[in-house]
Image (cartoon, rainbow, N blue to C red; front, side, top):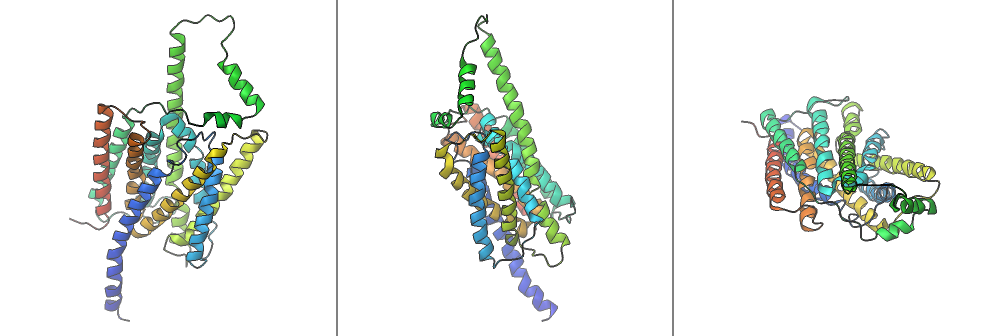
Length: 365
């Protein structure tokens, strides 16, 4: 076959891949932004039981993907990316409990966006650099995405409502934990408190919780942003490794499953075989795992067709817009004219930035 025939055959596929990549970005954004919706109304406890169930659903569906791909070679290094994601996801429930779903996702996805974009654009950690065809448009779009993320952080959310089944979660606690809660709630004997002391203490506690939540979100974002590094490293440095993303999904998920099991076993040991488990959250957690693996598989497809430089700013920031919609219309976490106006402006800026990043893949002027 001549070189001209090869170019003729490859060109249409390349044109189609951009469309496929953008569609994958859309699917991943919607599903990532909705993954915590099934568990939002339940008390998730420490979050490790939820993550363990999510990992089971993730492994099962990814195994089906592996079968669909014809049982491609298993690359153990890809498991490292799953481990990094699992460590980050272990903080998700504590973050959402302190900051709310929308704000938590938006903060960790900002650092996720920056770390993932930098790795793809500059070729960090042994990866080959894959800069966009239009660097100016890519940088401007990235700046818009970051500005949108900053504006999102200025939106004031209401305090998360108490889960509907808080009593069920309490029933799963051990006697020592229930006694501790009772003693914490009891008034101090012989203590003299002013009327402003409880308010000050509550304010200080809320600020401390918020700072802890933000710190955890920043760390989680860095871990999330590194999940694809092992896979891309294999693609760039291992001879004969598939250039497509789907052959690595099962190994990636196996890393999640093994790490989640280790974390849960360690958690049970620390809790002296008395973990905080809410039985009613079991099925929602499995649903959350199914939603996540669909999103992550779409992320693999997007990276394959668009490169990490383009896909990361889109997929890491748009889910925050989706989560904000859930927070406004379903969970009522965000209210007030000012907050809604600021949120709308942030969404528009973020969408414009994501669009510019997507166009920077091939648009040159």
